[in-house]
Amino acid sequence: MDLSAFGFYQPQVDRLIDLALEEDVGTGDRTTLATIPAESTGVGRVLVKERLVLAGMPFFARVFARVDPAVTVTVHVPDGTLVEPGIVVAEVHGATRSLLVGERTALNILQRLSGVATLTRRFVDAVAGTGAKVCDTRKTTPGMRVMQKYAVAMGGGSNHRFGLDSGVLIKDNHIAACGGVTAAIERARAASPHLLKIEVEVKNLDELELAIAARADVILLDNMTTEAMAEAVRRVRATGLPILTEASGNLGLARLREVAETGVDLLSVGALTHSAVAADLSMKL
Image (tube, rainbow, N blue to C red; front, side, top):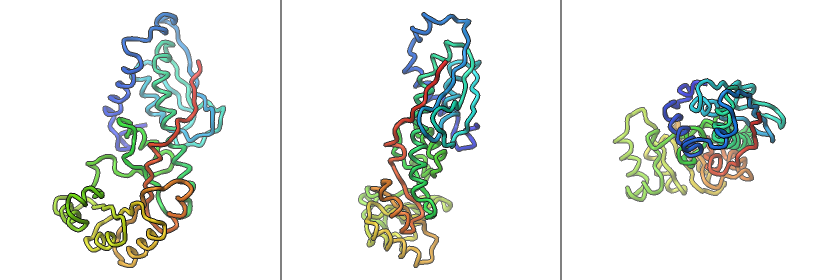
């Protein structure tokens, strides 16, 4: 897969993978060098050991490319697929030493990303039919944002802004520093290109009215009760303005559909990336 088509740049991915390999391999895999002849070749089969949504194969393959460009990875199951235990999703062919050196780093990435995709699918399924989109946040593992946001997409979720340079999102501390919602939006509007949308976080209906009056493009309803969010959506729709609403804060699976049914457009869920459990996969020669 060409990651640039997904908005990601290969050098950024390679830097992360190289750092992970440096951490794991150090000056060399002493066990493998001592026990495996240089001329030995083999095949590693990647086996799913629990029900999961597969994600991360481009990164898995890239690990082996960085270890040894002669290694080939054959993917049998595409990312985004719900896979049952016992399925071989990929095979890795090449020098046995190279397979053993790259195995742990490649699996670490694949397991974590499949965990993110699997959890995301559960959230997406929970709001099916409501029209609300489940979005990720910037609450990602440091250095792994590219990969984790890819995994969210493979799980059926939507990506929020990638980083601070991706868009304007005025949060509570910006509002406090500016002296209020109106001032913050006005400053952001004056300093931003006309094509850039302005999103602002509000915590109550009074702030909502200020955000509407200042013509925010997106209004984030932060840690509101379900009843308050429903009223906020009603007020926004009554304006006739093309303002999107986003819910955030305390959006666990148990409450998610209730919030989605208020009519909000977006549900931003930090848990997709900060609380996902690594999925169980292995690679056997």
